[in-house]
Length: 85
Image 1 (cartoon, rainbow, N blue to C red):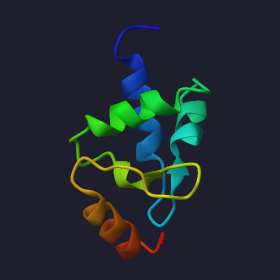
Image 2: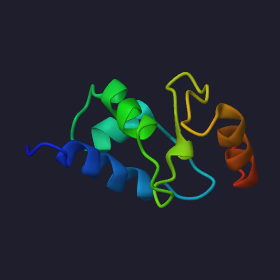
Image 3: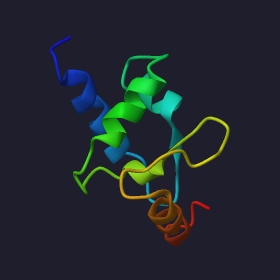
Image 4: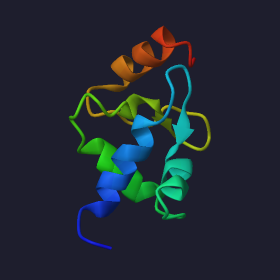
């Protein structure tokens, strides 16, 4: 796999998460073709500032929100506004 293609695939997968829905970091990793790469998905999301990628829709496996590069409060607000919380 070419360098950067994992991050690109993760961003593509996250773009497909519908409004009002969430996916876990692990689910995104699996859908991107790399089961077990949940932490790597988190790093991709942490470094994403492309607003076309709704990274606020990616949550932890235990149902907690996890981090968000623009603040967990905004993540919670966005998810509530979309009906995901």
